[in-house]
Image 1 (cartoon, one colour):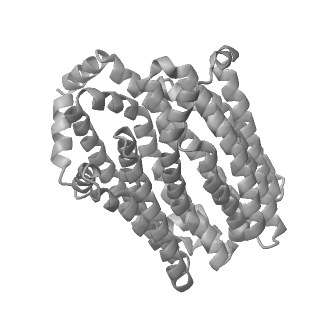
Image 2: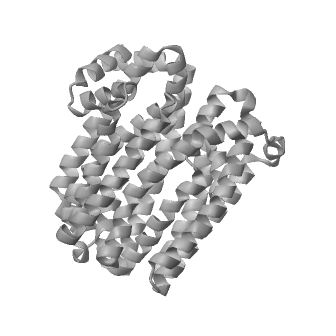
Image 3: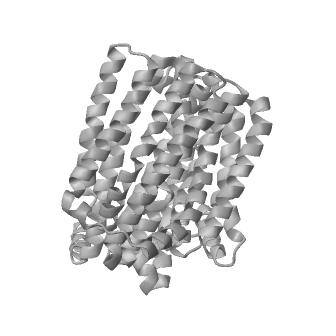
Length: 448
């Protein structure tokens, strides 16, 4: 056994590209797990401190801001990373284009969010103030371009270190605020401070010399914009059907219902970080493989889809089966109603895991239109079902709406187009666990 392990490690050490991807994955995984773990514990404390109603206002403001953040980010992550990988000679102009698009998008997102908030909050000054203040985060989204640069170079270590320094400062301040029993608006302002400090840290890390080397190229700008706008609509639609539940719960029920629902979602969505980290780290390598050997790349995708399916099903069984115990232990008796929501919503991870990987595949195959179609259908389905089910079934209705919408968007729509149908069958094979034998075969080949 130990001989096989040693042989496997020796084989990995002789594959520098794979080792670089694994190191990058390790740093990304550490970053997400560490931040998620610490943030989750502090958020539990904050939820108990604020109680469901104020915790609902806090999460409503976050959901509202997230909806408009799509305008600021403009779906550029996949596009910029792919351009930097495929066209390294255009690095300076690609980064300049990304900075400009996200800066203008951030300004527009902030103004739009304020206008919509004035219409929807109906004179509730506390909710309006929280939404407007938190929406200013979108003004700093242009700094994410620095993240794309290091991701394309499989060098996430620097980003991880600098982000975690800022993160720990914010965590300490949040704990101090809870102990001092400060009001809600201070916790909202703290999120804005985190965005400001992260932006300053990113530009310090990127360096003045690289900034001066950037150059605007009209043809590159238009090329990035042409590819990104469809993806931006897709990401926007995806964000809408992930966050519209909280917006509609506030409108159709109340802010306390948002707090109850948000407590369950916090636990359910905590698992989404794992496929996001893995896909973000290994997909640049798969993109290169698709250009050289599509069959080999598809085998690698099949292994990932199957792994994601197994993990997400286990998560659904474990968390769904013990939802009441989990909610009472973490959030307390005030959030007991969140247990039934959690037992439903956690199964969305089965489709989300598959959809994260499937979405990147569609971008790599220049199938942005299919991705847009799937997310638009998903968001329409979610809004319609929320409108029908929330008044009847309350917060549980919102959970069922999200579950069905995720299945439609992430899986079902892919069977429409002849090219995306290949993705659909990979997803179905993985979700039905028929492709487990491929995973076993891959493991045996790579462990020799």
